[in-house]
Image (cartoon, rainbow, N blue to C red; front, top):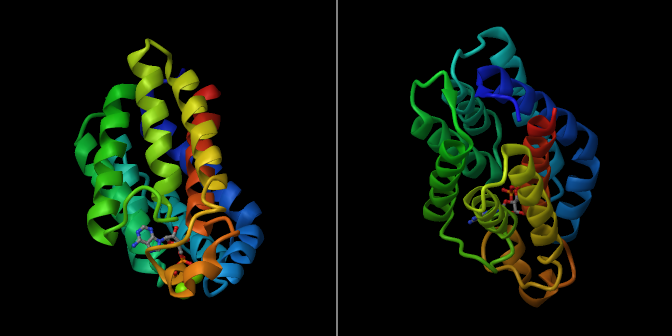
Length: 211
Ligand code: ADP
Ligand code: MG
Ligand code: MG
């Protein structure tokens, strides 16, 4: 795959912003079933702000891009997903530090630190029907593929598949965190919006790594 530098992370941001823009109606539809019908709007606002900020002042390291995106998500998204995704990306970016080029294992470790931050901030665990139900299997697949000697593109492709499967596997779950948890049993039978957007963000990494 291509080197993981600032340009790589900017291409990821382009792909992520486009995917969120395209899928915003679906995300909002999912959130209308078990939430307050704003997840697509929230994500679109956040990623549009992040994309604009990074275009205006392009960071020169991969960590810098992730920190800038995280900061914009935190400041522009009112819903739960803004601080959660913002924490994920800011933490991941800080973990990468000032290095101009990082390896796939470093990016994996940084994303793991970020996902741990989501768990700490939101108090959710696997199976609670949240974004973590896509993110945790994605990390596991990414790690497994890299540890098995797979390349960056192959590993992120495996992560994207696992994230998609994880998002779909939220359908039969009962929500235990976030707004959907207010519905109790009635949250069963619907796919979690945040797990769905997480799968889009991971797929954007797979698309970027494949180029
Ligand atoms: P809000 O619920 O404030 O309207 P969004 O609709 O943008 O925010 O995001 C909802 C998504 O956020 C949920 O589908 C879920 O995946 C995620 N989420 C909510 N609370 C938590 C939490 N405590 N931990 C992890 N993810 C959460
Ligand atoms: Mg919502
Ligand atoms: Mg809301």
